[in-house]
Length: 461
Image (cartoon, rainbow, N blue to C red; front, side, top):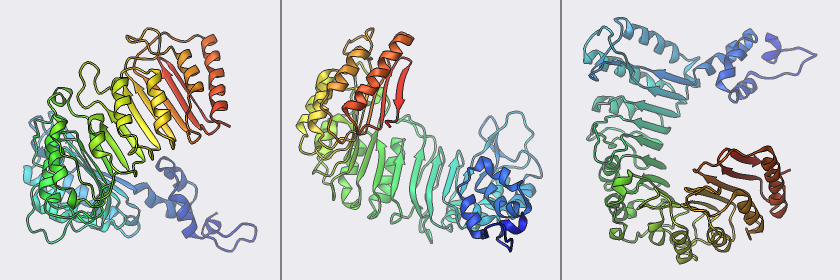
């Protein structure tokens, strides 16, 4: 078996080179790699490095007061031994992902002070440049000082950098910058509080392709420290909270984002969104029109320009009774007022309070290239909904009779309301509706109509 695996002379078996086996093992799920290493000595030699594709590091522990310390006196020695193994020539090329996070331990004996914790983190960061194929780096509740950030800048370019509730210091005159294509900053969703300092000054602006934020203040740092001072020629995707002050700052800096194509405005705290004055946001002057817009329907007329839009997802940026959901009349008015700018849209997502015929009729008439439609309904489809728009039977009949374009491939109607459990007879009846719907639209490959406990999903033959 060893000779066959390495492609040596065995007349009865095909010759497979080690390089080909390595390419095969790249596609084996991580949970099965250990089984591969137990197959034979040759497979163990080839596949063992793939056990270390993802590494987790705990540089220190935290006590109840959030103070850093080492949980055992030999922690640094044990970590150095592990790092020597992972950085060896046989293992290091297989490392693709590294995650850092502290361990919360209550009642443990502290070993060393916070300087010992810094020593542990510094030791790990010094080894990261050895992982030449590292693609993803994540820091969760790990604070980074200027020297540690400067150490990160010595790494090879990353595909993804995740900063989760981290504190990153401002670095001035860094000899080099951290190259990351996609950056995600996750922090407290409360727009009025940010317990940690967050500076993104070490990011290479020429390498960024996608950036996503949750916290309003984190976006402010990014706009001030990176966008305002540099042209970002490769930044294509941007996701930020739907804050009027932030959007006004962003509109003023669009000249430094010439490649921006996809803009996602995420939902903020409900009480805070009520004070958001979208009327104060000027009409943006994009270098190129957007191909994807996800955000409040109140901004569609300003942010959707030209005829390049391919994906549109809208919701209510100033909800009153129903959180984030639009009334059918608002959907119809918004789409009709932007009919020329949205004619090229292929993927549509709508959040509506309840579903009525005008919503489907508007969608069918305004999107001639529609491939995918998802309607998220707040008050329900069943007869017990607070606003009765459709029973599920009436909905299916209406879908079958709708004038969807021939391009339609995916259809999803979801409801948050709950109704009665469907009987077997009702389930059989709706199965017949499924087949009728596919017969009416042969291009459909996926349909989901979700009401109470009913979820119908299938692939057409």
